Length: 384
Image (cartoon, rainbow, N blue to C red):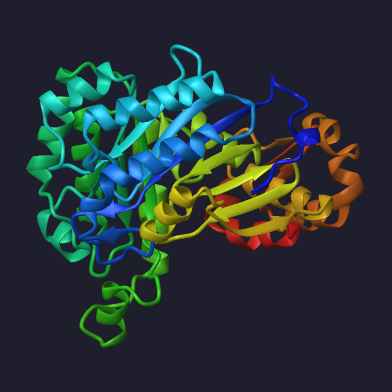
């Protein structure tokens, strides 16, 4: 994608940087992400292509870096270090900036994690998903709960003081007591951050096929809501701040990278299928790593889709994303960004959502109520 010179006038613009690593040992039964199994042999070429794409990026500042996937921990510590250096050179990533790497238990050990920490990674996100091996098998995960505990302890020994654990609830056949046991097991480990996601049954996945055939029951939405409320109660009692609909953190350990997305601020994605949002435009790269590598090798743009976002849509997306946060949306910040206040644009929606008990609006900030968090999608669509 060609970037106009006028778009880079502010060298001090801060952005978040995302590097997509689309390789997996095996796709999970519920996954519809842009990931591929059996292509690990492409990793060296892919890292070369990532470095080349980063070098072509606009001349802006960055303040976070996130390795997502896929399974970024399939890259060697040396490859991760090379990519960190490339981002630091191009984007002026400051010392001490949050650098997150997603990892699957079973793909990392203490030595690997120590080398990743030395390479600059200072936040680790482990895709645990459940504390019960039967549920892990249902999800198609390759690790066991014992391996997840081992990976967490290895991270501590390697020097990581900021660790996130991912879990999924609302699984077919999952009971409230089993979910409670998963939460208790997670809290015993004492991570700084927890991401808890309700299962989404994605069309075309093996899990969706098993549910459609009647082999597995469809997830119970009412039970999932009870699981969510249980998590709110247990994590609050344990000292975690519920700062985003699906995310809890100990004080001062909120994910700075993801806050950029939720505040609808600028970000740059590199790699196969990675998306970017900047200067009124959103674009995404070609999804397949082979095509991505080929385009970069030819000196061509890897961009596959470009969309210009009009101000009205940008406002709506800012509302949709910002309402996910406990901090809500500030009228002052909204006015500074768009030149109009919240009530000038969304008076009817604010009035109706307050009447339904889904929003709190005091003239300065709008936030979801507790009930609004359970019915978030119904609220968000009012602003789009």
